[in-house]
Length: 129
Image: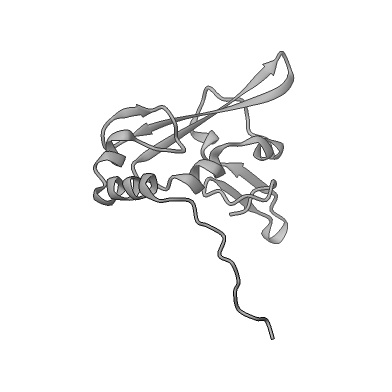
């Protein structure tokens, strides 16, 4: 569903049907240590970017909202955990290093990227008429 900031996020939910006024972040709702979610938090949330970069079904995210400086501003932090290997993930955009190592085509893809040369600009020798 699209967030108030305009990004797709599977954890955001809204319902305005027949007079309802419900907006919530279901990822933050599971974290009791976090401040309450507000719609303006979606503008600075890294979760939609993480979900676009890594769609691993074994990655579990935790969103924590806290105050930056007393009550001025809000900080959003995301922690990731691999439920398959039971390890914390340092960079959620990349994902679990063990899961990535077990993918058979990934090594070939990375090797091909290293060996490939940047594409050259082809010259158009044909006459346009």
